[in-house]
Length: 293
Image (cartoon, rainbow, N blue to C red; front, side):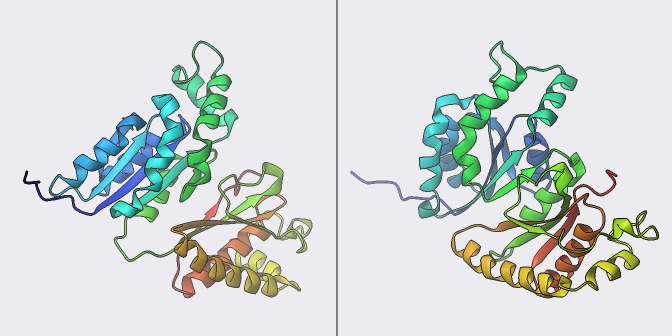
């Protein structure tokens, strides 16, 4: 019996998952605008079939798949499917979209739609069931994006930054300032605490300004220990970047915190971003809590 030749081609696969209401549809549209063939809300049981079909379809080299939590029990098996994809010649990147329970409840209430796993109970019950179902996927995601305090435009920019450039694998870094009073970012890989530096808040001439103002930046960066702090974290990112790439992780979020996310963390984040850019890294700067005070 004569077998047909294997005509499957290489494939880039973007797997988008995460909490319902956290922005999966926005991420899917961003990928489509970048030229990816996107399958939205696909049951996870069809993942392997969709991949096989895409690899046999000419001119389909980049596929985005948005997994729907309503796939239920199959999520316990989808991790095994994902684990075997690199051996099949598939360039896989997994994006997990996260948000706080409070933010997700508000979004569902404003849309007047039930959570897909709510099953007649509270929205919060559906969210808790979904978090338990997706726990393994979140733990192994290449990129976790917390959409609690960002808008759809910022989410699109994060997706574009991660997927727009067809270059050899390199680490993409997001440096994020934040205020500890508002909580540590859930999508942070590394957390740096800038509260050891004197707070410009107590200087009445600097209080109304932000860390983006040259006067505040000069005050923060001129304090004892600030340069050593930047040197250490610049070196730390360089060290972990090599290991992350070896392990197939292409995205890292470095969160720099101070009390309110207005002065010290902003100045340090801006300075660290500039240093990493000078090192040739693909880096962006995000100020999560700027403007909240």
